[in-house]
Length: 514
Ligand SMILES: Nc1ncnc2c1ncn2[C@@H]1O[C@H](COP(=O)(O)OP(=O)(O)OP(=O)(O)O)[C@@H](O)[C@H]1O
Ligand SMILES: [Mg+2]
Image (cartoon, rainbow, N blue to C red; front, side, top):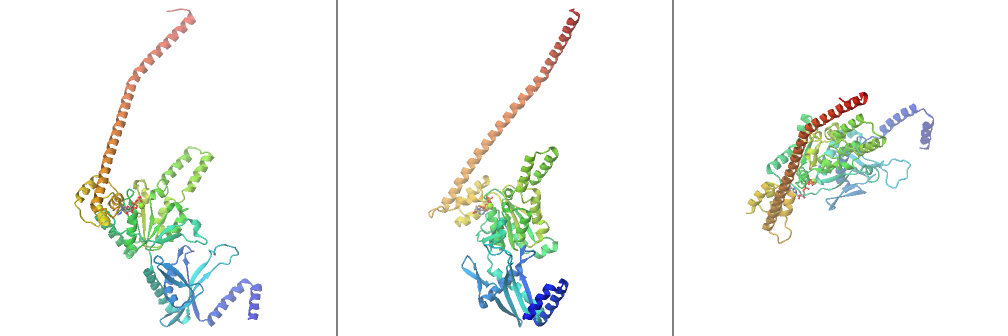
């Protein structure tokens, strides 16, 4: 061994580089001749660390079942709201598996790069991977069927243990280092469903069918050559159930929810990275898109800027302020659009993108054109249909004699489902249905009175404004009428002055008065 080590060191020291490469190649061949095993590694990240490998996760799930029985050192992750734990093997632990008579060794590994720095936190350059080792005579069996068997079973186990999550994006300072993750998550437990969602029943049916068709449409989307994505735009006044609808969608399809806070995203590259890091079967939500960023006005701003640059030379202070402003608006409209339906959109399928807004007119038409936001859903004020759903939810009642009055009032006055729900909710154990309905009727009547008052005030203000405008125009007319006469008078007097002036001159020159 000592001789070997010595020779190896000498070779490394003195032999030319090319020769070393040859030597290494033949050495590997020699080893493979003696060492009859094949090794396959599965890394945690694929694609230049951009995306977590699904195969790695599937293997992890597959091995968790096996390792809890045979491995000696295990890691525990909590599940179901800390009610139970899932065990997986710890690093540098090895377990065996059997498949059609072949023995397979699995090991969990971690390589930490040995850079010479002193850090408080564990190194963020660590690389995790699973390694499969098998005798080379089973090579075909492993590559042909075992790996796909592991992935399939792993995915099934993962689906069984799966808890739906609600993710929110981290600022990019947290993407590296000890707390490394782009998204933080909590278990998603919103109880909303389409049954409890108060809205027009036909529209509700339509949306549900649309969602189910989308989730079953993998082959269809592949055939028509479109990324397996669908965009929904939910718009309407505050409190009409836009966020509730998103929760109902996630519960219907059994999808995760990614709540993307655009203001925390620095630039387009970060946005792209975040979206690539979302999992399949997920809903990406951007709430209040009109407030998130100045996406709406950016095009207009650009135009204005160009004009500014052409028209006048800006002073340096102004220029600097403008540059600062530009730096501030980091995610651009085109960046967002590119992620939604540009080339990057095809990374990963089965995603739903939902935008919500209170003011649909404020949005740039490019952002919400069909193909990007395929379905526009207006969440409107509470109609009678919606009220019936709320009465069923809150008071478990299908019919009441007061319904007629409420129906008439709802036809006359606009009230959001949130307000209706608040009035319907019993405030104490002694509150009966009748009390709640009466409270709602009172509220509706009060709202009606208020709106009448408001309408009257508006009419009065309008009339006043019109009267003012009328007076103004009459005054202007009068001024105009007067002004030609005035002009004439002015002209005549000017002429007289001129003539007199000439006469005075002549007197001066000739000393004669005619
Ligand atoms: N259509 C609805 N069906 C059932 N409940 C509703 C509906 N609309 C509103 N609510 C109730 O009102 C509350 C507020 O609704 P939600 O947060 O969904 O409104 P929103 O449209 O997202 O408002 P915002 O525009 O301010 O975000 C919810 O907690 C829910 O209980
Ligand atoms: Mg909302």
